[in-house]
Image (spheres, rainbow, N blue to C red):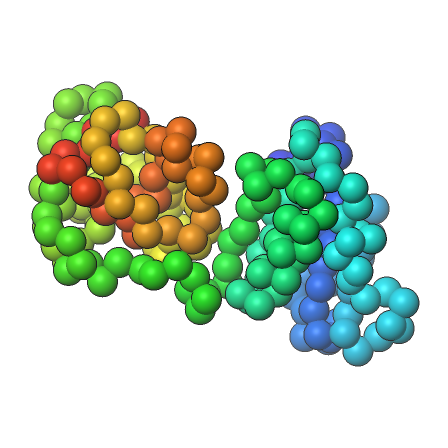
Length: 196
């Protein structure tokens, strides 16, 4: 994201928090970046992240992205929400599914069909497989990364059908707009039509 924002001359600030500088990744690459502020738990207490101070007043045209362990994400987003930051600008990506929403047990719902809007092709998604699994098995170029429903890389739009959201990344507004995480979510209806 930083490389893209730098290429586009985007306005951003990265607050990098870690317990120790010696155990933090990418410190040499980020040290001279004017958009980066480090916060290390074993250094001067004055530089420790103060979420309210460092986040600042709510800005509806500014996105807030938080990644890391569940407790950290929940802490930052809890403060942001209490400060009045709009939910639609708050985004999270967890390092693991610890603390994430319930992931599909694959057998937790019966099978259903997905239809690709671009071709009309239909594929059965049996219990035990994710939508993403079926897309990839059939050679569909589907975006993905974590395959846990915690990063948002696999999100596509549902054009028809009733999704069963099981991700931990989409906001209520994004779900209402038809966004869908193919790696973890399923269907409540017999068919889902995807914008693919």
